[in-house]
Amino acid sequence: MSTLTSLLAGLIFGLGLVVSGMTNPAKVLGFLDIFGRWDPAMAFVMAGALLVGTLSFHIAGKRTRAILGAPISLPTARDIDRRLVLGSLAFGIGWGLAGYCPGPVITSLATGGGKPWIFFIAMLAGMAIFEIAERRKEA
Image (tube, rainbow, N blue to C red; front, side):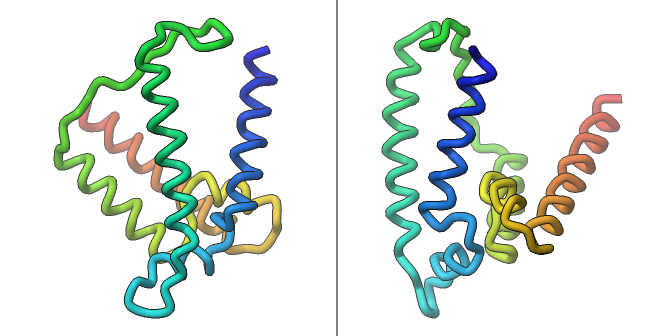
């Protein structure tokens, strides 16, 4: 049941990304172009995501188990440290240069074309580099 629920949630998330235009890099870059031809449509997508996320975390914070019975384990870290800031900067720069972030690029792989694949491969390479660096730091 958990796998089916995960699949359904992923399909709904992917559909939401397509309907909202998040899989269109031109739409995303238009939102980020605040000094040019700014497209405010993504602000509504983000506001909706913040509303759903806020309500979901509020409800989850009061529960110990998910609806399907799995334990709920919410993050407890609240520190804004160097790693968080640098990671956020890297994410934002990549998003601003390419117009993609991880969820939408995975959804965009199904539409064909080379750009989503190039971003996806670069994203995987970045994740691998991070893992290698973390393992070396631990050793």
